[in-house]
Image 1 (cartoon, rainbow, N blue to C red):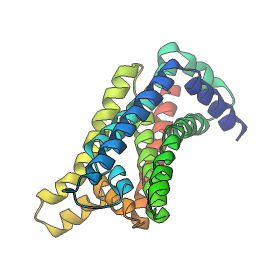
Image 2: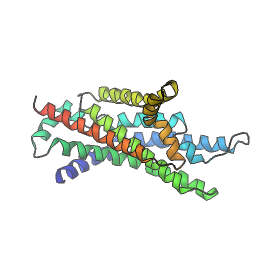
Image 3: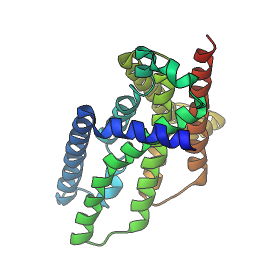
Image 4: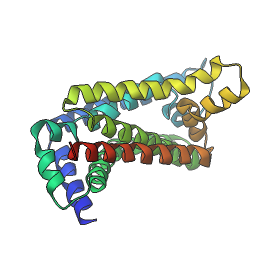
Length: 246
């Protein structure tokens, strides 16, 4: 655990002392603020159908998903690829620390910064609560979905970062994998077989967030996020181990 903590604190400092991280935070809050303002403006239109603003905020717009799809590559692209490019991974791998500990420390740092990005958006719920009644159950489940899907996206990004020395290539590969994963669920509406529809429906992230935004927590979704996240973290540690013995 000491090695995991040391790696975690090192990477967390790198996030908070990096200008890029603060640029990401600025644009993240700018985009989400625009999305929230757009949703509130839309719902205030007398011709618009009613509904909780936060339900639309949690996955109800394409901008929301584009933000998540770009966050994964941006937050993870340098984590291992930079170590591979600089050669510092050789020193790290010869230290008394396992591949799993390195992966865990770096991943937890990325996840912590990811949650830090979302923290200011709690103010949106406060604004809504000030002007009207808020059902806090769907708000909590909405953020649970953001945590689960974000955790999976970051694990995929870390795996891509372990496969190349180029941060740009890692970001592109991560984005491609996330688009592929996101597209699997959308195939649900194009298939006629009930079995195939059930399988792809299980992978439909948009549908997952729609349920969670309404306060419906299906444990199968959470198991999917957890198992897929652990699978990609396992692949990342195996990728590092393979490089160690080359």
